[in-house]
Image 1 (cartoon, rainbow, N blue to C red):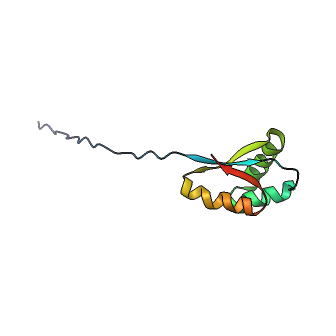
Image 2: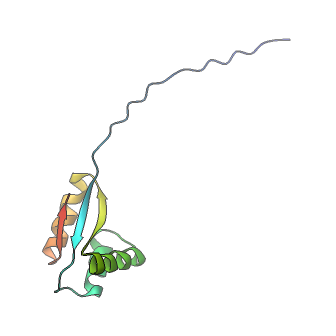
Length: 91
């Protein structure tokens, strides 16, 4: 009978935590539901269902987080939303 030894190596894994930011979209009385939905689909890469749900939340709650990620990823997306005439900010 032979004994097989299993050697298990411990590896220390360094995980870099990055702070997640959010683009918050605010309600306004200017833009239509369809325009906001189309904007979220093109800028934030939402599915039509996601964009519609966010638009409804913005309408009834006054604001909604529409995208989460690193600041470098979110800055151009937020700028595009602002260029389209939507009210948004990164928090």
